[in-house]
Image (cartoon, rainbow, N blue to C red; front, side, top):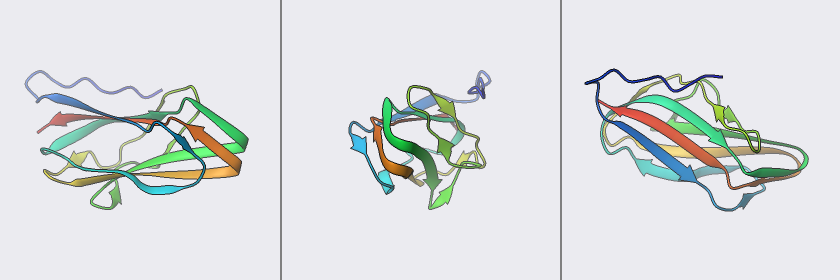
Length: 124
C-alpha cells in the first residue's frame, strides 16, 4: 500500500483535513463537501474508508477536485472497513483554491455508511 511520505524538516507545517460524513449514502453525490484551502500547499496524501456497505456489489469512489479539476490519478475506490490510499496526480494546491469532494456510487440498492476522507498537506 502507498504510504503518506515524510516531509523534510523545514519544508513547512503539515496539515490533516479529516472529512467524516456521518450518514448513509445510497446514490452518487457531487460536491458533498466544499471548502477553500486556507494557504498554498502540497498535497502529500489522500485516503478514504467507510464503516460499512450493503446491497449487491456496492461500489464507492471518492474524487477530490481543486478548482473543478481532479487532483487524483483516479478516484479512490473505497472498501468498507479498510483504509485505501489514493494516487495523487496534481500535488500543488493554490492559496484559496476551492476544494470539492464527490462520491460515485454503484451497485444494486447500494448503501455506504459513514465515509471518511483524509487529505494531508504540507504548507508551502
